[in-house]
Image 1 (cartoon, rainbow, N blue to C red):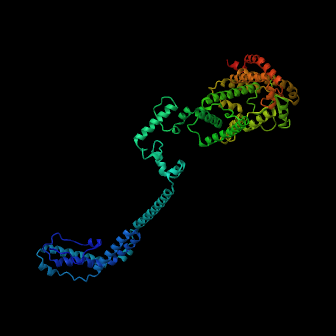
Image 2: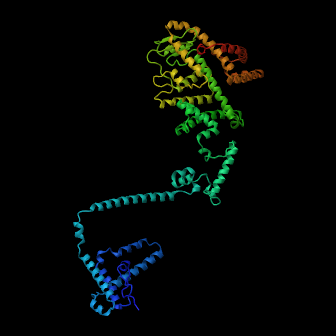
Image 3: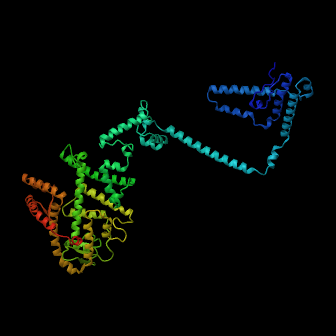
Length: 609
């Protein structure tokens, strides 16, 4: 039998140096004792060249808890016992190979062991005799590899430190994040990338408090949400659409959004055309976010005025129900029809205004001051002290044009024009409705904001006249394009034959021009309420309402309180009888004036034929 050696091999480093013979039936036990002690003796000699084994004892600081501390204490005790056993071994005598040759019958195995022992001993002796420090100092080449490795290690350390810092930040943020039930969607989406990825992963919104009863990532939940979405879509849109190419309504393409919501389409389109002066065909898929902010700002300015008016009217009448100005009583059902009529009315008003300006060739006269009254004559002279020149376009044009001396007149700003119009209306005893004035002022401000992107110009390009700018912007598919084109040509012909007048000649012509201007103003009302369908219906309703108030005897009270303001020419009508008589006369002569105007032929259009 083979008994275990007297000095057990205890450490992994010692175990790696031991060599076992597969067959040991022919060897005495003392031989194995000497072989087992020899590695220990050799290892003790080179122990000082290896790293200290006591360094791992410092790991005891990381032993947390009583159980771990006890295990580490027992490990230290075993290490101390092994070290004591190894240190107590006496010096081992050299191997007497002659004695072993007589005792071992297997000579070949003995010769192999002897040769291996001699080889290993010579190798260890050569290692101990070498001066490694000198060899390292004498090494002059090959240090580039060392420097490269050192640099690479430094970069790795830096990356490790970056990873450590990011990890610390992530742990701190994750620790500081409150529970999902206490955080709004905006807060945890903006601060936590995990939840951002979570939201992007899921197709439909899910109340995660109900995660215990349904899985938001399951196919069944997706099918349920899709079926519910189709059901809501059928009830909302009613177009029989079953193909869902998108998710929620706010994620749909803008053309589908505008197809459902016509109100925002009109609002955004009006803002886009006013802001850029472009074409509806180039309306963008999505406007810049700053433009949406401007839309909301303008809208709330108008609402602020309308709400104050509504509050005053509702509190004064003590009524339970009161709707705002320029809003139908039932906005949900009557809103589209109401605003369609309002837009058509504004469009008709613009066309009539343009027609009146074209009648005396005032349209496009941006370099001149039109003069049709004595007051306008006096204001024109104040522009430069009377140093300019008056021009006449012929006896059929009821207007003179004053060109101030010096530099050409600058293009006025839209807000300046609106304020001048509002001031004139106030001075003549009339005024805009408060909501209408706020909307028009917002429109003028948006129109003037073009100057930021057009180099200070809001209508014309540098060196371009207002006529050229207008014709450039006007679509050729517009029904009135041929009318404006004919007017532009006739306007050029008229100004080619313009006659300069002296101050005396201009003053002599002013009485006749002002008389014809007053007649034109009277006929303008007939045209406005006789030709335009948008104004004729409203005019008839107002006429019937005035007649009803006159029959009831309350019309005079309405005039005295200022609820109704009646103006004829430049004077204010203060008596109910005079107002009723003026309305009847207007209604009697309206049709005759309309027939006379319709019989008039435009020379420029006749030339086109």
